[in-house]
Length: 446
Ligand code: GDP
Image 1 (cartoon, rainbow, N blue to C red):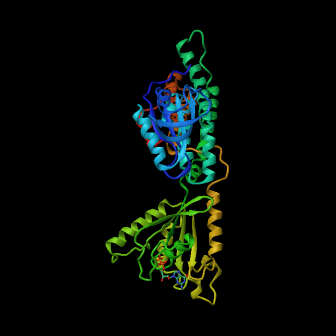
Image 2 (image 1 turned 45 degrees about the vertical axis):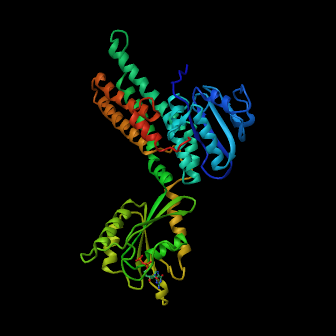
């Protein structure tokens, strides 16, 4: 049986604050039905039945609305919930919210509705995290993947691995506790079970990099010495005059970031010229440092040089800095060399005439789409990945111990730790700090 935790009654506007067709105010907690009774023209609402009427403050009419009543535990939070669907104007929703507050609810904190859903066991923690992912998804693909987690696939997989490990642990413990009646499980059995679980975990972790890219988008940095045309390319790719373009070397001092609206979220970073020089000013030096960092954190680096000037030593030094990263070599300003250039010069473009830009875009897209497959088995976040890594470490310890035929008593200790990390993913075992950290990233009203 689900024993609901006792909480006070909370309320919030669940729709974005703005002008729209409909605005929704949500109330959750014991007093929800009493509050609506006080402010709604229809009385004795039946759970699950939509009611139409007016929100009133005494004899003042506030708005004509529909009300959706849910009785615990059959609601999003697992508590009594009332949803008021009113006209979507900023001040209409605010007036109704004020009235609900005046009648005994308090303002909900960020993510508090979902937190209650988790605490009342309506969903596990991986599903609650999927709610936030779904809302904040930067791309439609990521939204689809998050919806899969919302349906509970990750939590189910974790529980499956947990059951496998738990079964081995139970057999070990039974063997230890009742040595006369129960024989200890055989080592080859333990080893094969551990290998199976490690395998399953590694399969989930294999998608970690793609998950991160799906979640955060791909970071592309444009690097090169000053004046080769980085800002011009940045603008061309963005189609706006965002970065300042001048012909004084070192103008782009800040690292500029913009999101490209391709099918995948792409953060484009325009870096100041990377230049290993003592004479440069302090500000520019900071810019250079940022550029190195940006190149470092980028998933793809666009290394650019000025083909009219040729590949200088300075260019080569910069290329050396990034050559181990995934990168494209771009030769800019081909308009200045109408006589043609050697074919191995890189991708030939001119940001001035637009030559080669389409080809460059296609090359970038080809690489970027490879980073992020359309269909993934599981998307995970950093927290879940950390727990899985730690669980895997403990399982490897137990595997090695089993291979060395160590005492099963000892094996069971690391096995218990492995289980705890899995429980942390689904939220079976969780600290307040982790919980607050997760729900602080939600919006109010969710
Ligand atoms: P950054 O310092 O690398 O960001 O370079 P900018 O984008 O500021 O460009 C430096 C100078 O080169 C500006 O005067 C641009 O107009 C010029 N420039 C950029 N791309 C081209 C190009 O394809 N052809 C020519 N001829 N000039 C360019």
